[in-house]
Figure 1: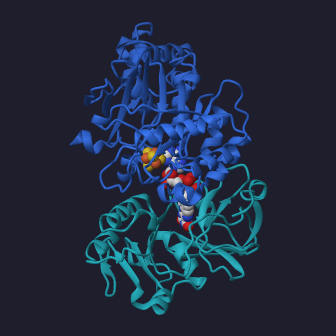
Figure 2: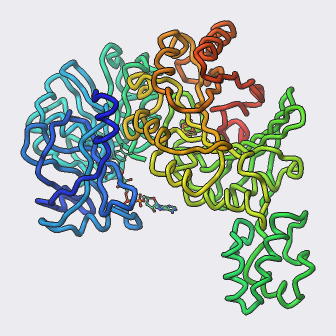
Figure 3: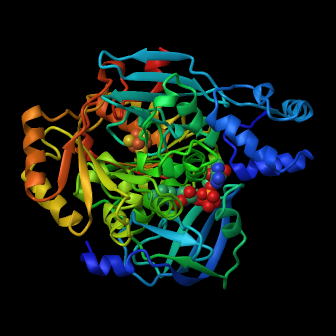
Length: 226
Length: 338
Ligand SMILES: Cc1cc2nc3c(=O)[nH]c(=O)nc-3n(C[C@H](O)[C@H](O)[C@H](O)COP(=O)(O)OP(=O)(O)OC[C@H]3O[C@@H](n4cnc5c(N)ncnc54)[C@H](O)[C@@H]3O)c2cc1C
Ligand code: SF4
């Protein structure tokens, strides 16, 4: 944790960075990158703004902590203020970002990572940072093309990587929502940590379900993309 | 049809001009909408008949009646209002000696997912318009006697900033309800950008839901801690000049064995050092499916005394309307809709 004064001076200051890449990896979902200037813990977030006089938005870092670039996975909100603009940004453009911050990070102990949509980002960052060994990753999406990085995750994590799809079916993909998948598991481990990331409703439903199955609330850490 | 209720004076003037009506019609409409006991455009009798007909062909007055009311043994009432988008919200009216405080909702459900809150369990279902926020005050039988307003019902006000600021403008302007902003408190869990805009654009009091001074404990209770850490919220508050009359307070729900120890008192003193503020302690009311318990009366009193002894003005907020699920954190339309 930074010292209070240092924190106050630097932590949330917007700094200009030059975009190095911006790729649409799935319809309406982009991976944008810039050169990494600071260390971070996988799971942390940055704030991004187009200009300094508009409230920045928050994004999970979606790259490993020893990679030369910071990447962020975002989906475009058609009537949003930032993301339609961000989607059109070309390499070389200046955007404003803060240093990484936040306390949504994991260690090397066993844990379950549970995400919906772009909520996969912090877990992918953890995976790329080399802390996926004792983990189970459950990713929920409505469509099959929303399982970002699935080839890499499936190859590296095997059975420990679970996809739940509520809108389409495919082999090796659980047909239904994450809550149904978890509900069908008889004995969920109760002595490990659970990390939840994504939309509010998934987070509160999964949290309630875990608690009803005997997981202590202290062992559940949530990040909501509000 | 579009509602007139919920529009600001400038918007009313603009629509008057658009309809070819004189500019002062806007001012007249504002008085009828926000200061008088009428509920239809035809009752705006100082407007010409033609103006009323023209307005009625394009707009409705826009008040919405509560569809249900529950009354607690302590006199607290809870109203259920339908919203334009087919959802429901709750409003609490809390009488106390010569005061009548209305606790309004700012959203249908909420995105913030606090562990101890019934509204959070509902998820987010939509934003309220300024009209729907102000309607919760204007359209209860006690509206003439309302002395205080708190934005502590369903939702996070600064996640619906634009409409909340508009509702504050209607409540505090001379052409509107003409209430003193000192009688209004907006409560947030610490959405920093919204909080700063509010501090800039409104004079109403600010309440921040803290619930524990420790980051690791707070993030398990309130996911927002990951996005806007308490340290950032406190830093912004410290840098703001609240002047003599404007108040900042911290809401602190007290959970048994979790956030009620001398260690918490020490840390609260440390992080609040330099802020002229008060702490409101609220004993937690257990909600279904939540593993938390409220602290006991004795510990609550001791906790309060310790904070007061350290020079932080601390009060215990009386639990009101608990039997009808109207107390803090208990609003959820599930109960009233059955
Ligand atoms: C901790 C955290 C981490 C996050 N990480 C990610 C991430 O990794 N990837 C990601 O894609 N997102 C993430 N988000 C969400 C992100 O911060 C933005 O909220 C999102 O990208 C939308 O930004 P925007 O400026 O495009 O849209 P905004 O302008 O913020 O609008 C968002 C939505 O609100 C609606 N809206 C906007 N203004 C109004 C208004 N005046 N009245 C009514 N409705 C309105 C719009 O219709 C739009 O759908 C995260 C959020 C948090 C809190
Ligand atoms: S306490 Fe407030 S911010 Fe938190 S979930 Fe409930 S309504 Fe939302």
